[in-house]
Amino acid sequence: QVQLVESGGGLVQAGDSLSLSCAASGLTFTSCNTAWFRQAPGKEREFVAAIGWSGGNGIYADSVKGRFTISRDNAKKMVTLQMNSLKPEDTAVYYCAADRNYGFLFRNKAQYDYWGQGTQVTVSS
Image (cartoon, rainbow, N blue to C red):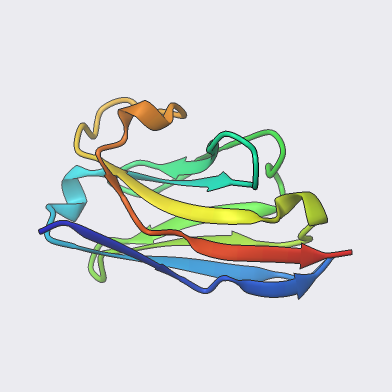
């Protein structure tokens, strides 16, 4: 059974930093691209960042570029999202996702096969 379990969410103030983690099990992690998405109340789930199966540079939504960094540790089967200079508009439930097709790195949520349950991030002004 595939599981993606997010952790690290919480309540912070604007300008603070937060690190989210996603622990994967039940899948061939090194064959999967991985990503973070987020969903604010009343809004669609949106792409945040993605990283390929071998690691390296990720791709980012314009709204988080320069503030967020995605990374992964294949030995630990973990994906991390380091979030700096947080803004109130970053408030959302953050989801980890995995794509079994490790070719192209997608921004489209429909391309991802597995999802975590989400972790809440709230940024106060």
